[in-house]
Image (cartoon, rainbow, N blue to C red; front, side, top):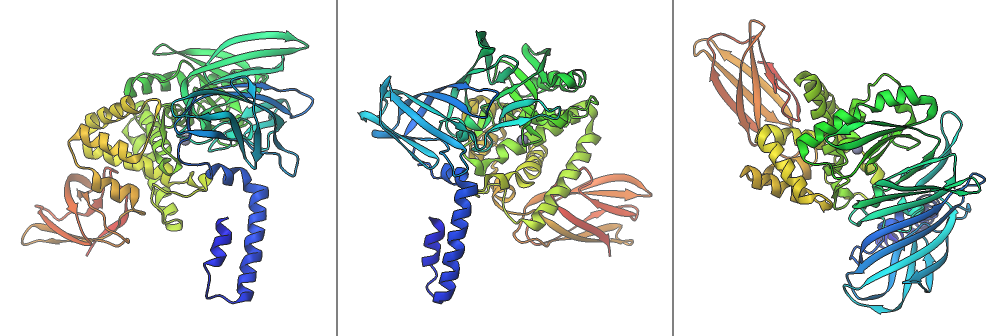
Amino acid sequence: MVLMSYIYLLPGRSRACKRFFMIRALSILLLSIIFYAPLLHAGEFPPSRVMDVLHYDFSLSINDSNDILKARADIRLRLLTPTSRLPFHLAGLRADGKGMLVSKAMENDAAVFFVQQGDKILVDLTQPAGVGQELDIIIEYHGIPADGLIYSRNKYGHRTIFGDNWPNRAHNWLACVDEPAYKAPVDFEVIAPEHYQVVANGIKIEETNTGNHLRYTHWKETAPLPTKVMTIGLADFAVQYAGSAEGVPVYSWVYPEDRARGFHDYAEAVDILSYFIRQLGSYPYRKLANVQSKTIFGGMENANCIFYSELSVTGMGRDGDLLAHEIAHQWFGNTMTETDFSQLWLSEGFATYMANLFLENKYGRDTLVKRLRTDRDTVISFSQRNHSPVVDSSSDYMSLLNANSYQKGGWVLHMLRVKLGDSVFWRSVRSYYRQFRERNASTRDLQNIMEKESGTNLAGFFDQWIYQAGQPLLEGTWWYDEREKQVTVKITQEQAGSFQFPLDIGIYINGEKTGKKTFDIRGKTNSFSFKSAARPDRLVLDPDTNLLFQGTLIPK
Ligand SMILES: [Zn+2]
């Protein structure tokens, strides 16, 4: 639809040009329908909240002879506006035969009329219902998931089935409201051939062989989850209790062929989880499972049921970074969820920096510095290709998995920590968690809490680092006046837009670092002087790796 109105906004163009645009627009539209229909439709869901989902119960039947999923979604909800029709996301049948066909919809056990429109299902109520009314809607459907629930073969050739919902691919197999701001507790009740073990969010409350070589497995998650981190996984697994992290049981689920290597690699999760519980406050869930899987990502932070790429298992235990990143997401992204994907850095930036902090705690400051420098290089090279701010309202959610959300988000948190000091930083993060556990948060919510805890106005800080694109590009020169015993430094900001920040300058005399001076950089041109008994051999910008910038400081 956007493309069509775009054509009529081109009054000055010739008919031939319009025809070209029309053909181009139609072909893009057609390609979009074929390839991107699920994503486009998901974005169209009415932003006004029609309802609050209180609970999902998904009953799923999976077999080995084909990839057809039979499903029943039992959705408990409360109305936020008077309505006679409820919309849900569910991927409809496509030309290639994949997608879901709804066979029945019910309201409180009474069959009701429904219509499938693209990737939505609209369910009519038996009568108009008012604000605050609670309803049970049941939707029965079946089909081959086009995405979101991945039927595959693992690296050993065995059939596996793994949910992979990020960002809004859940509605390919789950009738739901597929947006991060709609969170609800979820039950998964799965009937599958008995050779599979089934893992999911929450606690396993039942496992029963039902005859005909089938098994029923019921997992119950009582904490509200966004759909992006709801999941199930079916495979032939080896399962180990890896230990307890401050009372939270941690399990490793790996392919039987990778049993020894996988148990070894994933065992590090116990220490990582303990570290984050001590730093952040109590874990928001009742268990943590680390699962070898077929996710399309290197790791996917599904709530308390983290899926890692099957290639993550090496037996070398080198993936503390990956494990720490995904485990940090249990706080940042899962229980404290961004209000929408423009705020993705609240998930990815925090997970990136929290992994860095875990590694700093484990291996020391040098490890943190090395990682910050690599991250800074990544941010700079990304900003040269893509001049966009961290908070980015792009509707192409996959494209938001970029250096702004991850490394720059992490760097902003590092600069906040430097600015506020360790104890205020951690106190603010813990306060953020206390207030937004099981809820949704925006950048402004984080800023408000940081300001309250520190007593510092951070509007300028957030504006320049989060809402303004790029980072400082500094060109500096310095000279020494022998007579005055004085060093003068001149720094200019060369990037578009202006930043304000404290700049550290390291002083080296006879090859030794003899001191550090800090100056406030404001505006495009800055100069300052300081006394020095001897001529420095060099001055170094940001010697402690506390600033996201690029630049040079050379003698005149
Ligand atoms: Zn992440």
